[in-house]
Image (cartoon, rainbow, N blue to C red; front, side):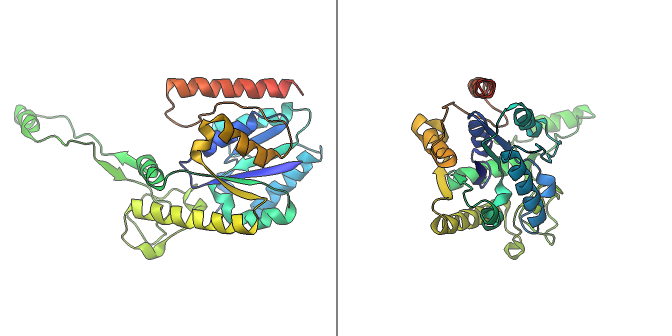
Length: 283
């Protein structure tokens, strides 16, 4: 029996990792099961509560997990949890488990922490796009003169984006709109002052993978970094699954789970869910 906690900076394929694990026999994996109760610091009680639930499930006792129901996607693994005759591997994937690796290992020494890593520049750009909102369109022209002025005014070559959220800015920086659910799940960098959103993300990326590297050195059997591109190949996915599942049977599926998925990626997602359903019914 194994517990798995997926890690990664975010914007790096963690949702696809959860989908890949959920396609495996006897496995249930959540994606950010309860961010409302988590925090980058001070959430030890929440983690211990989750570990108790995981232990009970693996011991074939009561199956109960506290899930944040703000997103329907978070409740999907609950159906699988209650449908499987036997749960052999259970886990959750979330950015915010990194500070609690040692705590988790104290209760589950065999726990696995696969960490996805995407190119630094791509992660920064992806976060900026996600946390930014486009400027509102100007009001409609009220007069013919206003309309003519609008036609003569130079048009911007790119749509302007105003960053609206910054999970890392700290309470002293009032330039950003607070996000009560997610800000607490990231470290704060008060010392960056008036730095840009991209600077905050870059600092987080470097700190995050620096901590992961240190943990991988201390716990090489438990913590391992995989490039995000591993999700795109049979060998890469098999490597991730062998690390997470040990000698258990693995099922290869193509996964792509993210907002704004293309038609091709949506089809791959359907195939993943179909494979997971078949694996569930076979037990």
